Structure formats: C-alpha cells, structure tokens
Image 1: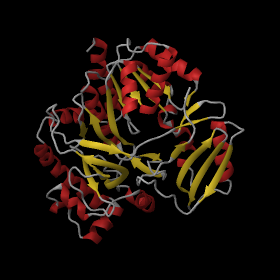
Image 2: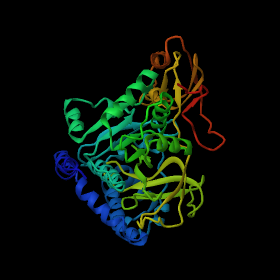
Image 3: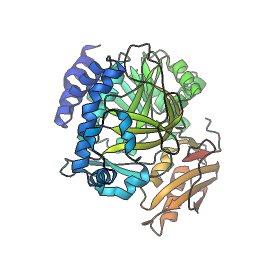
Length: 451
C-alpha cells in the first residue's frame, strides 16, 4: 500500500464518512472480523440483531405493525432464520401498495431511490444512513480482499444518473482526492470508446469498477484498435449490476491483464454477495439473510435453484423483509477454500442488460432507455424491444397517474437517444409475460452491438 493510499483509507475517507454521519469504518472492521468465523458462529451473532431489527419494524413501521398483528408474529419467538418463512414475501406490488406506510416512524433522513429492476417494474423506495453505511462497509471489505484499497487509482465505468448527476464541485473534489475517475457508460460510440481507452492509459488505475457489458465492450475495442491495456498495472476489475457471462470475464481478464471479481446486488436489495480471489461468491451474511424460494413461496434446500429473497438488517428506516429480488440463484453447499465462513451463492441466473444500437451505429447501454421509463408516474411495467436500427417497441403496462402525453414523451425520449429517424411504437398491454426461462427481460435488442 502506498503512503497516499494509506492516508486516504485510514484518514481522509473515514473523515468523509464521519462527516456524512456514517459508521462505515466500525462496520467494516466488524465484517472483517466476522468473515473468519464459522458459518454457525456468523448465524449465532446475526440472530439477536435479526430479532432486534424485526422488533423495531413491528413497533415503528405501520405496514409491519399491522402485518405482525394479523400474522400473530412475535419477533422474540424467532429462533433461526427458517422462522422468517412465517411471514409473507415482500414484492414490488406490496411496496408500491404500502407506500409511506413502510417508512419507520420517527426515523431520520431517508433518501428516495428508484429502480427498474430485472422485471422492468419501476419501484420507488427509501434508504437511510444505516443502509448506506452497510453498503459502503460491505463493498470496502470486498475491495480489500483483492489487495487494493480506497485511495488506489480507480476507474468507474457507470451509467446511473444518480452518480452522473451528482458530479458537483464537492463530489469532484472528493473523487480527485480519492483518485476515482468516472467514465459515463451510456454511449459507446467509437469516439467515446477511443476516449475511454485513452483515459485509462493516462490514469493507469489499480482497479476497475463497472458493468461487465461496458468493461468487456471497452476491452474488445482496445483489442481491435491494437492498444495494449495489460501493462497498466490493473490488479482487479470489479463488475456488478448485470449477469457476468464467461465470455465477458475472459475478455476483460485477457485485455486488462487482471482477474475479474463479480458482485451481486442492487440499489433495492443492497450488496448481497462478492467474489473472493479463491472464486467463492460470498454472501454478506452478517447483515443479510438470503433465502431461496420456489414459485409457491416455499423454502428450497441448498443446491436447488429458486428465487433469491433477502432480509436486509441495515434497512431500519424502510425495512426490506423477505424481499423478492426477481433473480434466480442457488446456494452453495461447500465452504470456500479461502477459509472464510461466509456462505456461498453458487449460481446467479437471469441478470442481463443489453446494449442497443442507435440509427447512426452508436452503441448505447440499455439503461439509457430504461431511465426514460422507470421514474415516469403511472408506469407499472415495461419491456423495450429493439427490432432494428430504425424500429423500437415499448410494451407498457399502465397504471393510475399516467400522463395523457406519456406516449409522446416516451417517443421523444427514445428518439433523442436512438436518433430522430427511428420509429418508436408504444404498445399498451394488461401484462407482460415472462420469458421461457421464467425471467422478465426489460431490454431485448435484436441488433448486433458491434463497433
């Protein structure tokens, strides 16, 4: 670790977190201690926190106060995580229906977030300081598994408007001090890709962070241009937010000359699992309970595939209890050879966000279109299908509150991204059926994203 990295990790960033009211340093230290406990010991330490979390939800959250009374559920009677199955699952429809009743009474400041999710159903929810603290600590712990730390040069290839819209002077100064460079991942034109490659060569980051599709796209472009990227000293590429395919892992590793560390989670469910250097996808089990359930909601044993359901203990202000992620996964039955007692997620299925191609051939991340729809009032669910460069379809399930000019707004937004000559159809339906796999894909492109 360089002197500058040590100052950032041990002084500057902890000060930053303290000023924001986050207890990230203490939580990270707790997680770094507990990761070496046995799985049984981790469960035992988590149980009283789970009981306290449920008790607060039952006392302070109107939705859970009523639910616990109806179910005759007493948090004090929870003896293991299996007892959570006595509560119903929490899905996006339940969250939308409950609304403000999911907020804890007397809670501190909550920040509003939204996500389209893997099903294309827009969801509005709230996050408090405890959840942000946990996210920072969990990611920080996983970062340190790979012999990098806060303050090492980092290139972030990202597309969320939350990050891209927050680049004010203070944020810019913080990123400069922590040596983080943000590269917007929405547009993947040849000129943009050339710029990304040049920026990475100038920065010479120790780590990359971003969508696997975006990083692999940059890697392929550099390879096609004959630009070497394996001499930059990159130690690891962290990927998240999408399903990581074997071809993407191989391409990123080959071109950048570093291992790829997969991460699984989301803004709604939190950082659920991270990959260690030994290849294990470790659950953040100290503060997140992961269940695998069948279509009828019943618990499935280790080794069987089902929907991933999470209970996040860092969500006191807006509790996520038995939350349906919409993703399919398999819990691992063996311990990781790294020696950590954290249980494993053996398989993750069904997360994918496609690129789309504009009329002029510019490759654009599918999220650029998703963001047009996901926070539009009255949109219950959607699916985007790009049939060709000059034709795109939006399949939409409308709810109450959809503006009369919504169709025009959607068409205008898509044309701004894809090009004015593109014909955009908006089709209203009662429901959007799942794929044959059982998953919902919210972006389907039938145009090859090549540069």
